[in-house]
Amino acid sequence: MTAYAPCELWLRPPADTLERLERTLERASGRQATIFFRADDIGLPGRQLARMTDLFVRHDVPLALAVVPTWLPLRHTELKGMLAPGGALWCLHQHGFRHVNHEQGNPSGKKSEFGPARSAEAKQRDISRGRDILESYLAGRISPLFTPPWNRCDGEALDILAELCFRAVSRSAGAQPASPPKMMELAVNVDLHTRKEPTAQAALDALLNELEQSLATGLCGIMLHHQRTNRAALEFLDCLLVALKRAAGLRLAHPTDLIR
Image 1: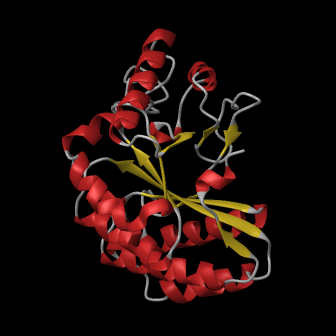
Image 2 (image 1 turned 135 degrees about the horizontal axis):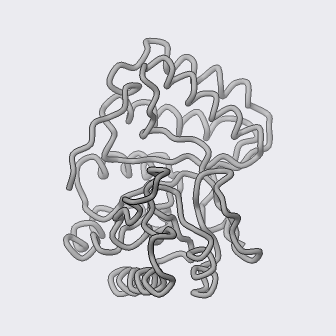
């Protein structure tokens, strides 16, 4: 697997990071809002994933785990052992097929595994094969939720997901094209670990703004990437979980319960 560095925010976190988080959540206290967490690129166990999932177990907070199907067979027994303490906390679901970009020729430069460069037949084949792999290793534990790699897929892929009886898709808030009428959008609108701001201060400003704005909408989806975490990132996540649990009016939801 490729080694990923933490973003600038977690390499050089401002001294007042946790204090500003507390102030942001104090302003949100009393609002009625639902929060869920989604962790991407799951499949290969390791220390970073273990440390992150341990936080959710310790605080008894549900987490959607987006599993890349072709990664799962390599070390599935070890992964299942790592996740066992969390039991029903996890919302295991499909994260693409191979997590491979097929849009190298797209002038927009935007990556996608299920975009216009591929035929409908190829997209349907990979989505179906991915679902079969997950069911074979995690029988009875897979939710009818699909997270496309890079939070992106085309309308044709969305129609295929609906035909294959997926009930929800999780992408970035405002993602286009819109999903089919009977498919729910479980959007993420806060990015904790893959930020691209050039400075830590700019990244913290943007992150806290995302958090405050998403709580104001009533549904806050927080995206995680364990490969990009370090001690500072995990300390922030720990404090965030504590603060969200004690804030009046905020509900930490199991993603499966949000799927109609």
